[in-house]
Amino acid sequence: MKICIYGAGAIGGFIGARLASLGVHEVSAVARGDTLLALQARGFNLQDAQGRVLVDAAPVRAVADPAELGPRDLVVVAVKGPAMGAVAAHIAPLLGPHTIVLPAMNGVPWWFLQGLSGLGEEPLESVDPGGRTGAAIALAHVVGCVVHASTFTVAPGVVGHKMGQGLIIGEAFGEVSPRVEAVAEVLRSAGFDVTASPHLRQDLWYKLWGNLTMNPVSALTGANIEQIHADPLLIGFCSAAMREAQAIGERIGCPISQTPEDRHQVTAKLGAFKTSMLQDVEAGRALELDAIVTAVREIGLRVGVATPTIDGLLGLTRVFARQRGLYPLAD
Image 1: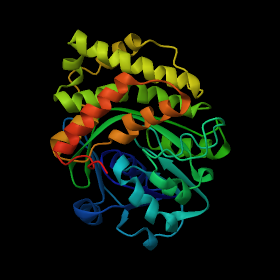
Image 2 (image 1 turned 180 degrees about the vertical axis):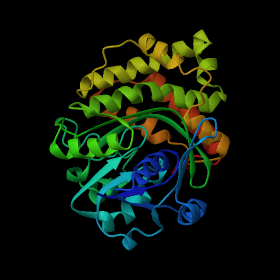
Image 3 (image 1 turned 45 degrees about the vertical axis):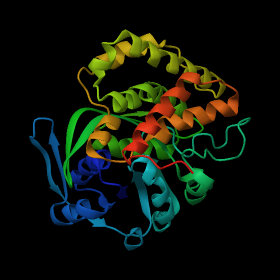
Image 4 (image 1 turned 90 degrees about the vertical axis):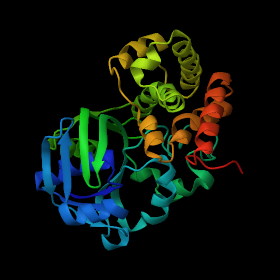
């Protein structure tokens, strides 16, 4: 396969390093700045949480301009939500008639409501302002993806892997198609634990159900998962927001059978774990607030589910982020 990793940060670098190390695919990357220079000089590098080398200098053709590459068979998009608009503006040279786009990203993707009856034809403004991403990447290209892995950036071009190697992939409309099976086999050969799912939208909503609260609450408080779960008032607040998201899920065909308390027991097993949003605050990076929280509120408005707890969480977090230059100012 001709595979391109668009965005070679923690998740993109993790997937890219594993694929490039096989030596059987033509792996390229679209990157920028120090990451681009590092990939051009030393290829992909992957370590475990203790700093032991897992992949050393796996070869990759790294470019800043996708036009240098031409159409790929598979494009793994692994950027933060705020960068998706720029990806949409430049991805066209990578897309041939049969190119698969696999968004390995957090939160609600731009395509999430496309084709669902009763929810309107308008794009989600929170994750696809003006519908530009949906126009640039047709739904026919998309194979959805849910990432269950914890990674971090050690240095430009060097990724650390803490835990997990699960990837859930599937068609937007539920089919486990031949192309999904083909991508699953490629990813399995690189050591990933891949599930080909017939209900990918539900899988996305379930992961979001936990991230919806843990990410912004950790960003606001500076607390890790263990510290959040230790406060009964705070965990009760999280449960209230999750019940609102659960009600939205029922309306859009993404039911969740667990209770928030069930999910808390699972999340608590992570221990003293820092969420990706807390890591972004500490590193001074823009927050993925829209894909994780704002989009849930927007969908709630469309289906008539009130979200007072989510509204409060969103308001608190975006003011917090704006004060630090990590979220756009209000229009």
